Each structure stands twice: as structure tokens, then as C-alpha cells.
Image (cartoon, rainbow, N blue to C red; front, side, top):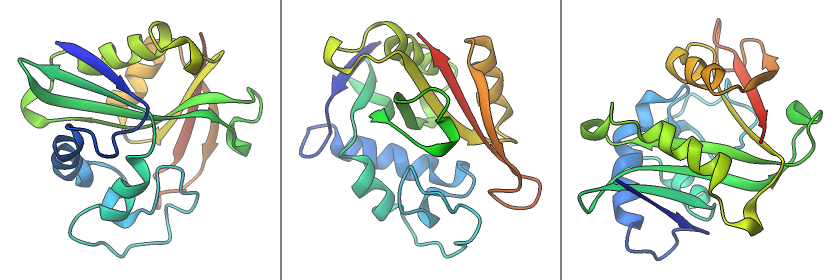
Length: 177
């Protein structure tokens, strides 16, 4: 398994692979990525219109820095982030590397790729991208992700009640590294 860092994937040889993985995972997000405009979208509860594929989301996402995991030469997963991110929900920490999207191709799940991505973000980013804090957000029913973040020492920063629908909160996390 290898991890490759890209400042963006626009025009990279892995762009089509990332698109395929994103499409395969889109409906696993709450709300689905097909109903979102960006990875930092604030209103997640109002738009129920979905299109067939997450074109708008992908067009914004592919300009972000990327980590791409490969297994035996095949693109298996990716993680995107925004460098030097600021938002009200994370105001206590100031700027951070904000992890926006993580997708693992279904056939490569259970191989530790998520842990590899977080290890890379916490220890191996190029010097010019390193910051004191990492941050992310997820939905309250994404228990696997929440458990993983807790195990890695992330702190809950803010909870936006019913932000993604009745009974589904948005939860922001951060970690000082």
C-alpha cells in the first residue's frame, strides 16, 4: 500500500479513479454528496434535490489537496482536505487542516486505509502544509468514524443539532498535532 500526496488532482492521472470511487460512495454520506454543492456547505438540511452523480461536489473537491492510496497499483481510496481552514464552528482552534472527504472503494475496505490517511495527515504532510491542528466534521450517526476519531484523540468541538435532518446532528472534531 502506498499513499501519494497531490496539491490537487485537476488533470492528474488518478482523477478518473477518484471520480469512480466518489460515485460509489456518494450515497453513504448524510446527506448524499449528489445533493451538495461543496465539502464546506453550511446548509445540509434544506436541499433534498439529488442528481444522478455528484458533479458539483467533485468539481469543487478536486481542487483541494489530496491523499490517494493505492494497492497493487490500483487506486483504492482518497482523502481531501482544506489547508488553513477557518470556520465559526472551529473558532477555538483558529486555522487547521480540515479533512473534508474520505472515500474507500468498497473492495478495499477493512485494510486500514483510513488509519493510514490519518497517520499521514498527523505525521507526514509536506512541511509547507503542516499546521498545529487537524479538524473534520461528520454526522452523529456515523458511529464508525466517530469511534475512530475518539480512538485517535480527537476532541469534539461543536454539535449542530438536527443539522442534517431530524435526529442527525453535524459534529465537528479537532486534534492538536
